[in-house]
Amino acid sequence: MTTQFSEQLVSINPANGQEVGRVDVTSAAELDVIVAKAWQAYRKSGWKDLMPHQRADVLRAIADRLASEKESLAQLQMQDNGKPLSECRGMVDYAVGTFRYYASACETLETEVTPPRGQYVSFTVLEPYGVVAAITPWNSPIMNDATKVAPALAAGNAVILKPSEDSPLLAPELARIALAAGLPAGLLQVVQGHGADVGAALVAHEGVRMISFTGGTVTGRAIGRVAADRVVPVALELGGKSPHIVFDDANIEHAVAAVIAGIFGSAGQSCVAGSRVFVQRSIYQNVLEQIVARASSIRLAAPDSADIEMGPLSSLHHRERIEAFVARAREEGGQILCGGARPEGDEFVKGAYYLPTVIAGLGPDAVSCQEEAFGPVMVVLPFNDESELIEQANGTAFGLACGLWTEDFKKAWRVGRAIEAGSVWVNTYKQSVTSTPFGGFKSSGIGREKGLDGLRLYGQVKSLFFGLQQQPFPVSK
Ligand code: NAD
Image 1 (cartoon, rainbow, N blue to C red):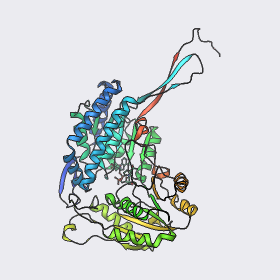
Image 2 (cartoon, rainbow, N blue to C red):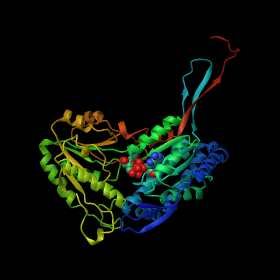
Image 3 (spheres, protein in one colour):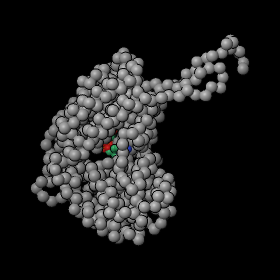
Image 4 (cartoon, helix red, strand yellow):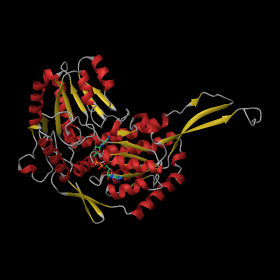
């Protein structure tokens, strides 16, 4: 939770309202210097000309240093955005794994020798863009930052990282660690400030040759327009309203547990949160009662509590957005079956806490079933059969993820293929790993991060032809 005081952003711990730290906002003049320094480092440091295995050594050194500072980074992340400490430790592990993965990918990535159609040898190489802008949201800073920075560096680029104004403290730590691990100065720099000014200036800067963005769909559209105008490539990882589907032949115990974890983990502040739950009508009432009973018993606590299931939201102003979302669901005729309010108790008074909320009684076209809340709010809908389900599940602008629960693998295959989403989880949920491509269909994004696609994202293919002809070229073939 951050307020801008003149030239600074102030990070506030959303669990207790206390200040965690401050950072200076980057001025327009400083941005020019940072971009120039990035180009200088890109051209002069020798980074892009290192052998891939040599770049990999530095990426592994960054991973090792991140691992050695795991506890302090996790504590800082917890205070910066209020996620449970256990989740923050997991996010640092994720960042470590990401740097290690892209070290290995960097030194093993093969390019193509293409079939010749004349007297030459033809093949491809992957060239870096130069200076890449990486813009990240507040929900999982160290993880989202690593997902962009590690492959962009592996591909030979310089990176300018802009974290969210609501969670500004982790990005400078990553830059500090990278420098200490041997990354040449200037190859990873951080700019700070609000999206509308510093973010917009970064995206529009003529020195930025590629933009990698994770955040909301409205922002993504605005950035996409600028990128189109400038003709620079852009990767957009955007929002979602992911369907989580329970068929009547599912293992109900496992399905209910996953449905609960899918939306109330991270207090719903996850792009892949399963916020639209579809339950087959024959089991609807039974499953809905189990969901409400479990949601009502979720243990809310401070992020560093050992006995926590859900912590606060990331800021008081984000809680206001969630409250407005639930108020609108009420106006639309939604029945709030549990939650829909702040928790009672002295321990919650200063923090941005909100109760796990389950809403039923709305049709699939209700605004509350179409728009992302990005909080602990689930809408539950009944469906009759597979074809109705597919139509309704696909009936939003988004297409980020989907979970489905059935013991029938042929049905899982049919439905999994018919769903318009970048990730489909069958009898599991929220598996999002460094080694598997991730991204959205429709308004959930463009491009794929993670996996080898996530490395190729940060390079441009160049085709090279080496002539073998013995005779001079004829004017006309
Ligand atoms: P946001 O779009 O408000 O901000 C994201 C980042 O963009 C911040 O750093 C912000 O300062 C910057 N920004 C804002 N306006 C900008 C502009 N005009 N030009 C350049 N930069 C700008 O999103 P948020 O509230 O920080 O994050 C929540 C959203 O992120 C949700 O919609 C969520 O689904 C999405 N998200 C998506 C993924 C994914 O991988 N698909 C992952 C996490 C979060």
